[in-house]
Image (cartoon, rainbow, N blue to C red; front, side, top):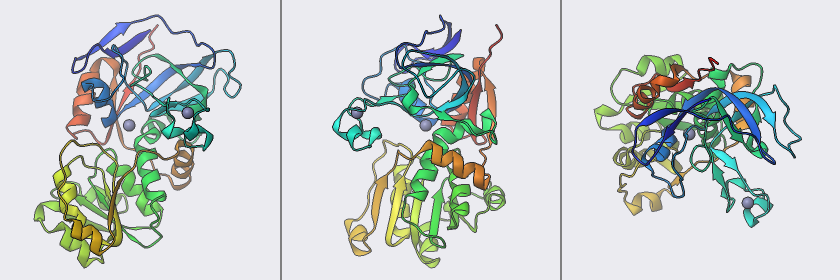
Amino acid sequence: MKAIQISSPGADFEIVEKEIPVPGNNEVLIKVDVCGICHGDSMAKEGHFPGIKYPITPGHEVVGIVDKVGPGVTKWSVGQRVGVGWHGGHCNQCSACRKGDFGACEKSLTTGLHLDGGYAEYMIARPEIMVSIPNELSNLEAAPLLCAGRTTFGALSLSGAKGGDLVAIHGLGGLGHLALQYAVKLGFKTVVLSRGRDKEELAYKLGAHVYIDTNTGDTSKQLQKLGGARIILCTAPSGKMISELIPGLGRNGQAIIVTGSMEMMQISPMLLLGGERSIRGFVSGNIEDTLRFSVLTKVIPMVEVFPMDQVAQAYEKMMTAKVHFRSVLKMNHKS
Ligand SMILES: [Zn+2]
Ligand SMILES: [Zn+2]
């Protein structure tokens, strides 16, 4: 099979020929059709994550068909259309697992960081983390929902905001264009915050109620004029921008960060104290809930498809936010 791997932190992608892996005990072999390219893959590419053993194949928005099942697998059978996301496995025995908090498992595995991921024609997955893909979604539509969709839907639906509340989506890229659709379908008064006017038309097309050009420099004042945001979902990786948005939160408002940035944030403690505002990160969420809601409300990602040998371009377009709006790799499977 062909697989795309990174041989050391910061190295280029390389396409290698490998033996198709054989599923061991409690493992499933998936014939991968497509895999979304996510900002989280940069952790494998650049080595920004503890415990990665190189070479590693990235990719955690994987859709394919069950090709073989190892001993002990009872839930999945050959031929089923399945998906794999960021969470790659848990032990079912530690204290967190015993509470049902699998994301906090002390032996938690991440797809494409601890285990080879979906930038390959075949991959091994653990049965406890796989999901079934609904018939209503194509493989290309489903892939970005497995991480980008799960995170943005989870962050918004579990935020405590109620129908009619003012919710701002900062950034209208891979995460933002899904977050916007979810916010509208969840019944929030949805404001899009984006630089310039380029994305205004798309924002309204996807259902936004208000569009604010952040280049005008008074974004938080404009949010306050609308009553103050109950939630600001921060999908753009900029510590500086997030800091500037916090004054736009209303009383009890919450900024939720769903994408990583090493940049420092500077926020007045008085601002958080006075209106009991808060800032949090969110990386969990449930894939099956996300797929169900997406099918029900017709939230569909917009994607650009790339063949395996264009992985470097696809990754670069994602990292520079030039892709419309999610890069997805399509595997070759010629032989
Ligand atoms: Zn991701
Ligand atoms: Zn555990």
